[in-house]
Length: 213
Image (tube, helix red, strand yellow):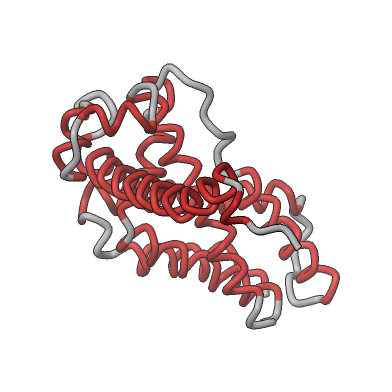
């Protein structure tokens, strides 16, 4: 049987492994701090007004730490937007897991997303960055495509089951629902800092969805 202690290289590698894991954990934690700080800054001030120094100050790290993780402000904006789009499926999964009827699932998906937009800076930043996407010199994710597809599928299920009685094209209806939803969050944000967002979304549910139920 070989003895690892007799092999200096193996001993060094064994000793270095925990150090690498610690560095990776620290780097991951710092990146998360930066994303949260950037999200808050973008949500409050908008992309043009935010600087990398703002993000560093909010994260309580050096500007060099920002550059270690991101090449520029555009890269930070893309990362925050990608985080926004990773949270939408998580909300959808939590709602669909309840196995509600399709129309109720759509309603809860809209309401739970509204709560996240009201309370979560990453969601607020993602929504604002999509509005300001023409100011970000980078390839941004396609807005709301998977969200729209899920609602399309749920509306199709509802019509097939007979709980949605409409002759409107389902794809068109889904796009109207998504446009109304994200439009309402924008108006609610400008007028009332999203405090009335769930009420506005409930109006969309009552008028657009359950009017045809």
